Image 1 (cartoon, rainbow over the protein chains, first blue to last red):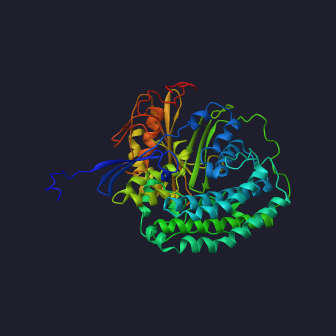
Image 2 (tube, rainbow over the protein chains, first blue to last red):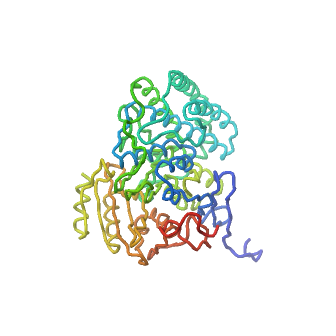
Image 3 (cartoon, each protein chain N blue to C red):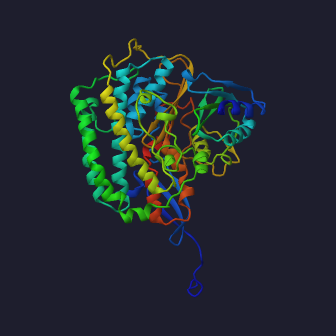
Length: 371
Length: 148
């Protein structure tokens, strides 16, 4: 047919983004297409680059704290925590137990809200409109809870070097318990609506397979890694804060496809609820801030690498101090950056519709990639 | 144990420093210093031991660059920091043929510091626009500079 029409057999370039709704922000993907199949995909990033690492070198330690809530706006508290822990290590500060518990509770609430947003937005990508209505309804309860103690609803800046600035009260604890009960009662709705939905299963099973070898070579972390059956979660693998004191499991997948990553995230929300409930039960009394936090943060010469588990994987901070009031260098190792760099390999030989499904399943937050 | 195996594997490469790190203070189990020409062998040894590249970046030490590679493992808690001192106006060897994930990290360092990577398959700016003519993480680049 091609010969009859006198056409040449060749590929063409298709531009996806930077404002395509399914790219979750300003990500652009240049696709080389052979008919409906992708032969090459190249993500073009940097549209949201704000120079956070450069800003860090131009302000003092405390002034950089609000920046962290804007790197990954969906799990801002984990980023807060990582930075605070890195500076606490440099200063040799120990956070009081109650402070650590408050950090864990708020952090896990934030993780659930991030997963809920992913759940809704991802299914929206796949053409299912209803789920986002359910999960935003649930997510609203978390935002209200966190709003009460942090004062913000999205870009939290709540932790301080040495602890947390605000204590939680009985109403907050009761609110957490009520929320856990509510969200548990919703799992069956979620399952009936999505997990058992044959349209979703057919789009997600055996699509976007990620192997162990790829995970090692690209440094994949988070639910994207655990979907491939590797049990690596820094809350267990490199225990920090108060996490060793709680019973929880690390859900993992078996095949490494989209459906496994979906199941891992759903199961993780349940585990976060368990952590929150245990923390509420065991909440110790006492101070929430370390004593003797220096007014002027000026760590001695040295360097530190601190990692935490965010909703998308390992966030690491490499902080170099030259004994000044300003950090000498801060590197933000963000999970989506590494996870997205695998994407060109996953996209080859798939359809555009699958590409959207794969991109959403690795749950990228673009400002975190661009920094 | 992974740490002992890594120490053994790295000892045969004749590196400047392979020492135990102070984990409580820095978060490192192993601290390594290598020459730029040795980095490809170091990366291969890390991959053979099953480690993944956690992070890679540079620090502008004014007289020279300090390149910092962080490796970790999915199976065992063992973080290795590899420091590679690199003179200004010198190039570095890519490790992207061993760790494809290093491709973007190296492009970012090229973009923000202007360090060239030999044998890199696709060395172009990653975060800044293609026509930018500055490298913002160099210490002589002040706040507010650049062609906005």
